[in-house]
Length: 358
Image (spheres, rainbow, N blue to C red):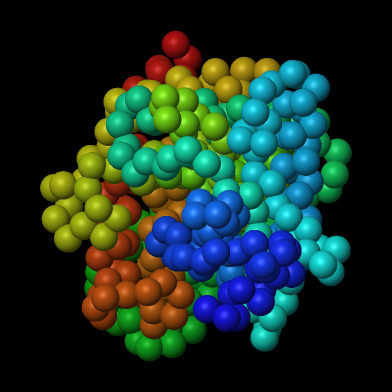
């Protein structure tokens, strides 16, 4: 605890700190709230530099995005700007982070009377679509360069290359399994169809936008009246296709089963969630979305379960070196579940297109 007080002291007067308490249960970063006069005043967070290896780029990206949104809101005369966008404090080093014992730390203002929700309902799916669409819209005229904080993060060609390398090396002999062989073949059969986005980008027909790249309901803050305050968890903000924000949300939110569901009968694609999210997203992006981007949104909803199946299978073949597992074939179970979700999404493709066109 003394270490946390010392770290926080780089950002604020340590004499004002009453206590530092754990906050939330994030899987990537360690987060704490700093109490001042008995109330949470700041958020202290350890940045996981094993995931985000270029912390300087990470913080530069976030500063550019938050400063741009703040300036936009102020020019529009929006009230309570300090509650509508995250604000990171500068340390005594002049940066928005410090390094202590090879660990990276940052501090931001705590937004009082704000709430996050885990429930995925059509109502919250709509809020998510609108909020992440608005987020992208606010950043369409951002001139500050934004770096790709996780190279190849949502690049399906890169993920397929990783799979082929894993198959060729077959480190632990998983390719002897018939089921694994069948999944590899299924993935290869769909590869050309799923790589259309990357091809269109090389042809100059598809732009990259500044995207959030982690679109979940719990990555929004709401006020006490249920209105969205702001989008949070900005670590993955980077240039990407709009597919990143549109496709990843239904992969988790529209899945009626679990990501690692052993019972594939549980897994269906919830079209009510998709429809609500699509409505909100199209409202938020109406000012900039091109006809081609709009046309390909249903493709994005099929791409992301496909890509996740590729990633889970790759890790299984490599000997489970990336994702945490609870049992030996966990990643294979995840592959089955994601492939079922992909098939379910593909079965609804024409319906998804009709919703977008309407």
